[in-house]
Length: 61
Image (cartoon, rainbow, N blue to C red; front, side, top):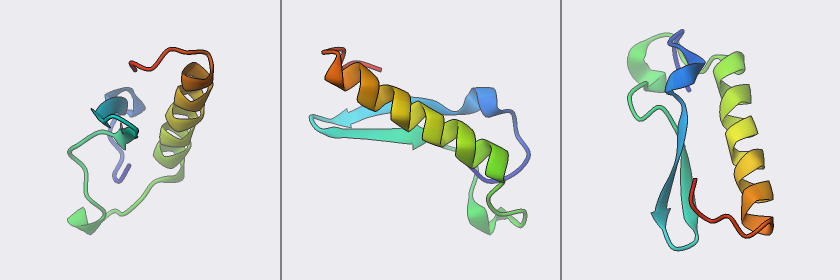
């Protein structure tokens, strides 16, 4: 969620049975720019949508 990269690189992964991970898997807050609010918002939207999908019985991202 750090940096000015495309928000299209943010994905949701099913890591363990009850654990989902959202992010781009590349950027780091220590790279110099830090978190960018628009990318944080995109990741939060991914998380919220995954909750809705789980409640609807769709457990794979």
